[in-house]
Amino acid sequence: MYLNGPVGINFQTVHRMRSGQYIGALSDDALLAAFSLISHAPLGLLHLDKRLAYTAFNMMLGGSGQQPCIPHRTLTPLETNLFRLLTQELISTAQKVSTLFRSASPHVSQVYSSPAAVDILSKAEWTLCASYYVHIGSQEGFMTLG
Image 1 (cartoon, rainbow, N blue to C red):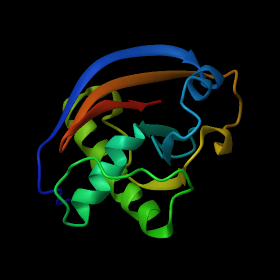
Image 2 (tube, one colour):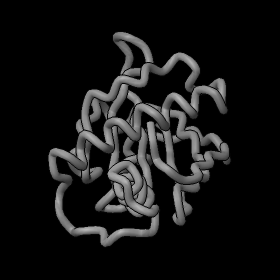
Image 3 (spheres, one colour):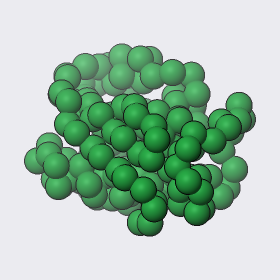
Image 4 (cartoon, helix red, strand yellow):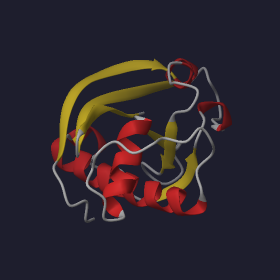
């Protein structure tokens, strides 16, 4: 994927928590993507700080990587596709950095622009949540994989 700027991903920590806790800890306007870990298993979720995502969108479309204006609305179809591509690349990169998601498939099945819209089977199920510190263009923030 061509971003025309620096990207850094550093592993921070892993926490075990309930699925409902993970979803509930995210901001109301969080961007999330559901992906397959292994077939017939619950989906994994990738969360990326919104300012990182919009900076990446700007760079993917040939921009400078400076923080663009972040609208308060749902993602457009173009932004959804860009987030899907970005997520697939971030999962692929995380697989190289950590063995935790080595078996993950970078195929994204669903993109959400709000944690309230995420459909999980049971909020009481346990999940592992890996946190990463991410630097894209001029922005820094966090990404989680759960």
